[in-house]
Amino acid sequence: MKLDLRGLNCPEPVIRTKKELDKAEVTEVTSVVDNAVAKENLKKLADSLNCTAEIKEVGSDFEVTIKKTGEEKAQNCGINFSNGESIVLFKQNYFGSDKELGKILIKSFIYSLLESGNLPTKMLFVNEGVKLTVEEGEILDDLKQLEAKGVQIQSCGLCLDFFKLKEDLKVGTITNMYDIYSSLKDCAHLIEI
Image 1 (spheres, helix red, strand yellow):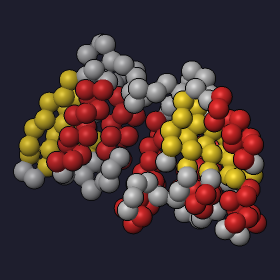
Image 2 (spheres, one colour; image 1 turned 90 degrees about the vertical axis):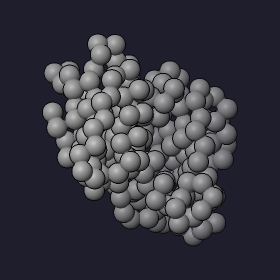
Image 3 (cartoon, one colour; image 1 turned 180 degrees about the vertical axis):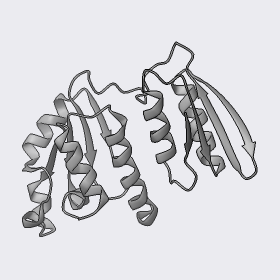
């Protein structure tokens, strides 16, 4: 199987390659990418799956061939969300300290979570994080898909009120701080954004 992944932004080359590798009948995938970062990310994917990776430079592109070894492992970043309740807590509507870059990163994070197949039990949105559940766009579409796959999407009602967004909620349900506290204290896995 050969995939032309040139021109795609992170994490798309990794996600598309992983989807092909997940197919039982596929033993190797060659992904063509046009930048060194994508090449390195594919190498990391191969390592995380216990697969081999051969990298060939072809002009300004890279061909990364990942071969299954028979001892593949599931890639889940060290967290298996299937063991106990798992929560992703969004405290802001961007990832990291730079807001402009952070908005790009949060979109990529939520998309990666959706495509990973390793879904949390709940996604809780507090403070500026609630803005992600009201803004139209790709993030909202991904959140709706996560909800359709059984992930509970819950936004803090006090936060929605504070930002005057309660009537604008487009995905999930409204919750309160007591329920948020109860969920957080009892969860087995927590990721904070």
